[in-house]
Image (cartoon, rainbow, N blue to C red; front, side, top):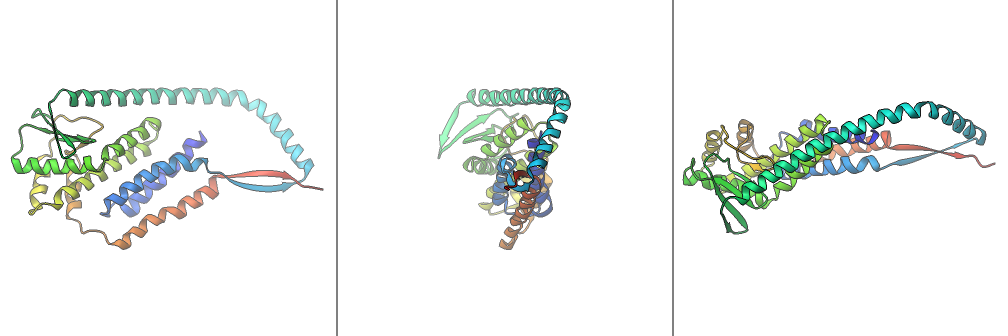
Length: 287
């Protein structure tokens, strides 16, 4: 229980600092690294313990041990039963969301298998039904047969190529695992959403770079505001946050000085470690 509280607190710090200092910036690649480091730090940092040694009298140590042993026996039965209930509920949650993840992954694999494929320049292109939204999964790029003219389809494919070439599917799968093992934590769900949003900003930025008329890409985003059939676990061209994606495309590039904002999280993590990850170790005073 203590581990999950610390995990949530650290993840909350990364999420809060993102909202306060980084959300409006345009260095999306660095933010991508920031999100991944946030998950890794939240997993590992609770295990870091700073020992604090205290020297006490020998008699005092014996009194403490005796008092603890008396009170522990009375509380053990209640704490064990409560822990068992919470552990059972937590395990059921992991089972449910884990099964959901496997079903989504299976549906995605079946979807990819059923269509003919064309390999080109390290990508695997799949032309699907008109009702399918464009998406990518690792190096697979899926797009619909109809609904877009040649120029629009090229722009969509460029968007998905950015997702595929930069392995954005790894980030999505990592954030899905974050949800599976922290399904009870609202911060994990919010963190997952921000990861997906940032990946779309990266792909939009990359797809628009090679265009002579950048407004055409923004019109394409507006055209696709009503999505059709789409699959989970994928980098999907359609996104409900179209307005925010267009606003990000209009923003000026953040200056290099803005990179110092990433450093703001470090003092907070240090304070967290020395506040919550210290362990008092009593040493008997030598006579």
